[in-house]
Image 1 (cartoon, rainbow, N blue to C red):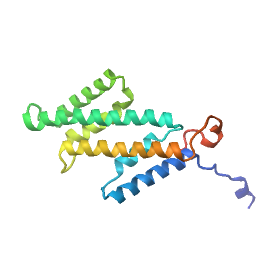
Image 2 (cartoon, rainbow, N blue to C red; image 1 turned 90 degrees about the vertical axis):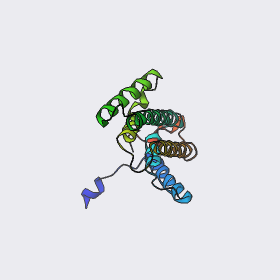
Image 3 (cartoon, helix red, strand yellow; image 1 turned 180 degrees about the vertical axis):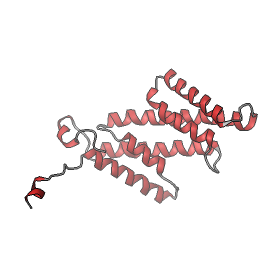
Image 4 (cartoon, one colour; image 1 turned 45 degrees about the horizontal axis):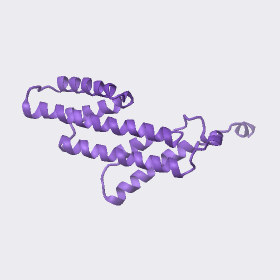
Length: 175
């Protein structure tokens, strides 16, 4: 089998491994505390796992600010839609909510948070299932915070990146 000897797969990078560990820890924590659906915590951990703790922190701040801002804007527009009946179509509310949250992200110099903010606004104004919009925004923010903290802890304490370790870290595109 000479062909098999020539075919070598690259080793997974540390970022790949640390991302998988972060997800594992998120799921385990949710199981331990009896909290359902770790999806948003896991998503935050995946998104926030970067080459260094510093970059992970920056991405985590954007993610948390975006989730908070999207939650607040989504709540405001949901209240307008549901209680004041001034805007009674999802299309108008969604469009105005997205416009507002992107504008605020740019105003606060957090343009990196505009995508997640927009997603949270949509989730709240178009529908969050049986949860109240307030509880959805609160849960989503807490779950995101948990995922960010876990990613930061894993990145800081499990094979932390040092300046001389570039060869251990992979290309940066290994997740």
